[in-house]
Image 1 (cartoon, helix red, strand yellow):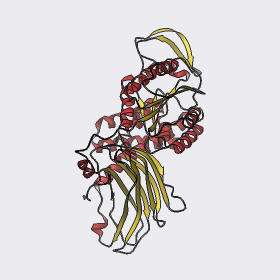
Image 2 (image 1 turned 45 degrees about the horizontal axis):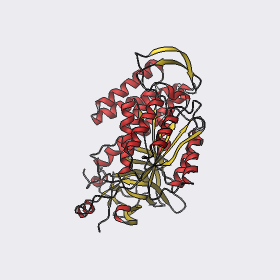
Image 3 (image 1 turned 30 degrees about the vertical axis):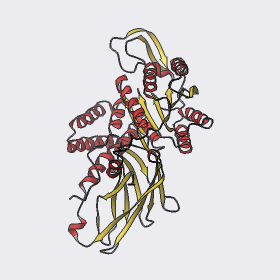
Image 4 (image 1 turned 135 degrees about the vertical axis):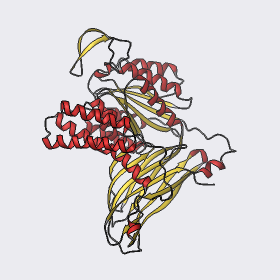
Length: 470
């Protein structure tokens, strides 16, 4: 029986000049194997693995703010939300809390009889509203959604909600269901380091991908860090209730489409090279950070789950030492391990050696892969916007210098040029708007930063690893 996946690699520089150190980007693609799909054409439809969906919903005071501005809202008087001035209004636009309740109801309607739902609300403490209940338990689900509209009103402590997940999963038997955490929040955590530590710990122990959605003045940069706790994670920014329905619907559909479980990608990296940054570039772009091999020169990337029909792609950079002409150097050995429950396959493995050649031919040494460079250009945008977020935070806190302002202005101009080169005029105009705002006000609104960072996660579906093209 054919393997469920294929693993291919491609270098931006397949040939390095002999005796000269240099940087090389490796694009590693894992994609469905057409032979496996063809072989299964006459068999029954693939089995759908039941899921345990864990919803974390922010119910802090600011969740009672409208999800979007309503110019027709009727003002009733002054109020406050988490210490900030606010207006009490009557509006046909739902509050963030009402939107959350509606989204949860719609998500439950998409679940099947064998699925489980855990619903945890949180402000500065967690509220366990539903613990591993079946979606057809209408009383339990209805009571949980009703409580979702009543609990909370304090600050924001996501870490405590993740510790509540630990308590739930330590006390329920949900095998063979797949698990996913879907988080909705509108604020930056009051203990962001503690929240990230809890998310990493719980995610690692229970193999939990985290899909994080932010609304309002949340920091999408913080949500990217939460998503990184598993490389099956994702993040996005919710602008209104329609987008919320779409994104949460996609989260449920993707979980119902899981093909492979217990997925890990292990990279053995040559001890002779220096490893640099890593990006996941499909299904969505996620800047992961610098690779950190262990004492055995290995890095383990936990994907946990892979969806049916989707490609998964990683891009990493390393600096190689010089080698004599006509010699070859193994950059890395990639090993993918996974289970495919629908095919009764366990601990399946794919392996591939990633190799570069050294040459004294100047023309060969000048060759570049257009595919890899194109993926790199898109992926770098997210890292640049994260850097931009850090600089704006510094300036807003009063700690920035004139040098920091100059760096922001130059980076915005570079992003405008980059999207013009992509032929993406809409995004180029968005960064022009950010540059204009920065020129006028010396800052950039969090809303614009969130929109830009969310947009930076979108990968181009047309880019796949192919034969070298120059």
